[in-house]
Length: 194
Image (cartoon, rainbow, N blue to C red; front, side, top):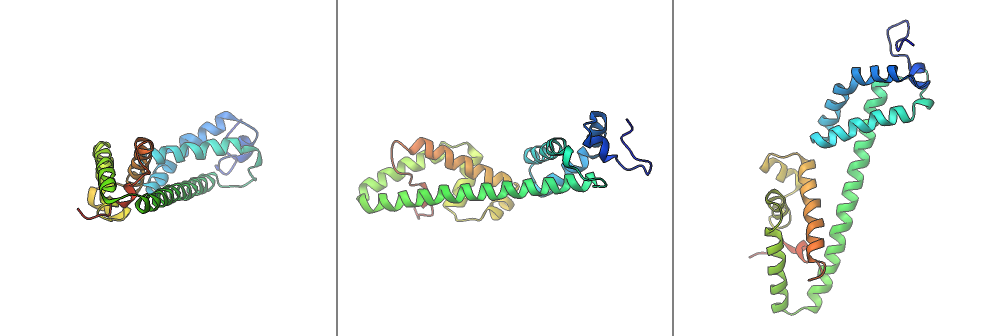
């Protein structure tokens, strides 16, 4: 079955009917272009690959409901954009919830601890932060101790915002796991002055 109509456009009906060669033609034509679009949105190579693969996976999965005359390139771009926006919302929500939980735990701890115990626990926290992977520790300290925004950290270290966010999430998860049995997580207060 020819994957193009008589005007040279991709034949949506062939894809809708499950024609794998027509779908392969779509991948061959648009993969690189969609990937570069995803990379321009995310500024992260791994995430861009995931977004691109997800877009083509969704196209195949939803092929049965494609409307006649739909522009496949536009459909793929829209799919990448929507998945990227979902990713951002999910990441931001998870990070906010983690930080709120840690801030609450910190408030409770500060109210019940004396100064000496608090200092001892802060030393444990600082040691665990130093044990983080090098880049992860640097990003975390710039955020929590220096108070830099993710954009400022990205500019300062020459990283993408997504990479900075990834390091912060990783740091939060590692520290939560390492510190959960020792103390209520205190590292949210790393805006302290030494």
